[in-house]
Length: 280
Image 1 (tube, rainbow, N blue to C red):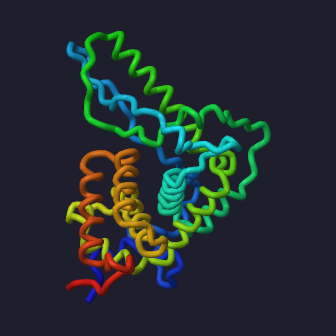
Image 2: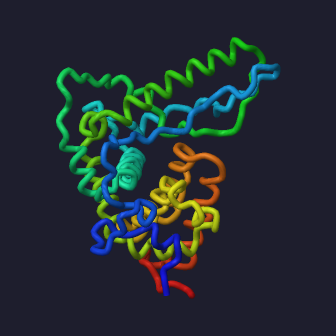
Image 3: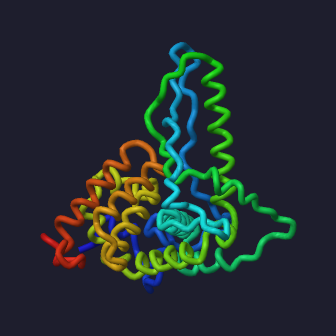
C-alpha cells in the first residue's frame, strides 16, 4: 500500500530512494540558484490609522534577569534557547535547499567571512529571544503609532543582522555544540518521527505540508530533544511553543503544543524519557 501523502513528504536526508520532486520530501535535491534564506519573525504592521489605532505588536518584554545572561564574556549568545533557534534556522534552510541538516550546519559554521564584513556586536544586546508576535494593540494617537512602527523597523533590522551573521560571531562554542547535537538527533530520528508526526498533526497540515515546513521542523527538533537529548518534556514543549510564537503565525503555537502533548502521552514512556511502542 502506498504511503500517505504526509509521510512521503518527509524522508531522511540519507535515504537511498529519493524522489526528484521537492514536494516529495523535505530534504530534497538542492534547488539551483537559490541562496540561503534567513529565518525571521513575521512582519509586524499597523492595522489601522483611525482612532483608536490598532497596532499588531506585543508590549515590550523585560530583559533577562542578571543571573541568566544571554551574552557571555566573549560577547556571544550562550543560552540553550539560542541553540534551539539556530538549529531551527539551519533545519528550515536545509529543507528549502535540499541539503543535509548536519552538513549544512558544518558548512555555515566553517564559512569564511566576506572581505570587509563587520558585525556590530551591540546588536546582540538588543536582540530579544522573547519578542513574540502577539495580538493587536490599541494606541491613542498617530504619533504613538509612528513611534511603535519605527521601533518595529529597528527591531526587524536588528534581528535580520543577527540571524544572517556568521554563526561563530553570534554564538559561543556551547551554543554551537548544542545546536549541532540537536541537528544530529533530528537527522537520526527523522524517519521514526515522520511516521508519528503524520499521525498527530491536523489534516490541514497534511494537505499543505510544504507550507508548514517551519512548523514541522519545530516538531522534529522538540521530539529529537525529548528522545535523544532526554530534555524534560515540559521544557521541550514550552521551548517549541515559544519558537512557534516567534517565527510562525496563526494558531501554530497552539497546534504544536497539542501535537507534542499527544506525542508525550501516546508515544513516550514518561518514566524513562524514552519512546514507547506506538499505539495503534
